Image (cartoon, rainbow over all chains, first blue to last red):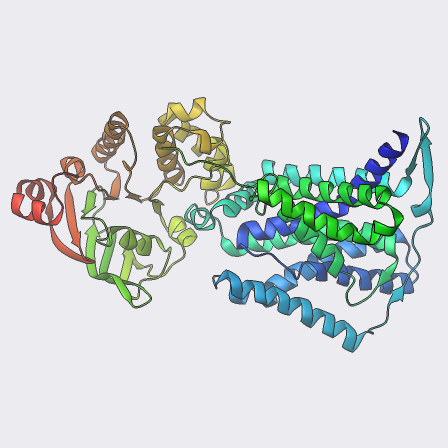
Length: 295
Length: 237
């Protein structure tokens, strides 16, 4: 039982990162019908920002702020440079654009920085452990969970209590109807990218504290996990994205902990089989749209 | 001078012309109907006027200003609101949130007062304030759709099929509202399948067929012209 609690907290800690990334992906999908495969570049840029700030002698508090700011600015830049030009084009065109941004970004880092991995120190407390009632918790998991809870609460407040947030939810549901109500498309889309950048930035802080490394592909795995989490929750559902992130984190940790050692390499494969089973029984994901039109 | 003047409006979807050279005017205080069979181009005409897409040819003038091709949010700020076909409510948002979105173009200081004012016009909405719009009945949903468009106090209201899918008693409520607003001098351009009911409350009307304006005139005259009415619209609707 003690072990299970530890593993669940560990899974929720890992799932926090996925949830934040997935929520950003779901926000963008909502307003643009785009599964943004360029979302991982926010993590990659954050990784190099960390490396440069670390090299300049700054500590993790300053690095964390730098990571979040760089992620928000990069997200806005990607929207302005790449997606604004193809807005209104077919979904497939935007999907290809997101792949284009991903590959161009990778190439730029390889050409102008390095293809080699850059390392930086992780905070000392990342490996600390506390014992509560006989159960050992990693401080890092608890901090990740706490910051994620605050970030999600702030996001819920933004989406439910501000006119911008309500407009964003409206645009996510029916973009043309929102425009008819006077919602400015440029503003709501830029806002969505800024919010997605903020969420990715917070996730990146924890991803980078854990890995302590920057490379041109640093954002690839977090992005794929975020997309998976958003799919599990039901694309377009913001609550689903968060739930999908936590579910993915917990399942991964439980599989890693409980599979026989020889099978651990199959963890990702088993996760995909479980996702396929989920979609067999719930094609819309955990919280996908099952609404019936009323007359 | 007409409050709304559309001249030579043509709407194309790829190579197909949905509307050809349509011209119409709506004077301040008028209730003008736009009727015709399914596929006649009525919704396309309204959508082009409201800025959902730019017409391939022709002009739209609002209050004397050329507003052709303006975006919907700009049109709304200029005083033209559209209640779209099928209502297009935000089903996951509450009634209050739907009205909040509708008020984004209203000055921040006046927004809540406007929403409260609208809620007093539609008391049923006040009772469902925190209900998600997806859970409203058809009649409630239609009232919310109209209320949203009124939050901005538009100079002219465009309505696309306001009675579509409603029970007969609720259709009476909607046409009752139109009649009462007409009496108050509110300017409206209404597309409606239920042509007979619309002509009973409208000042004038245009009849569309196959993307063109086939006839126009005072509503009472159109209603009386059995030949034209039966040929282009049909009494059954």
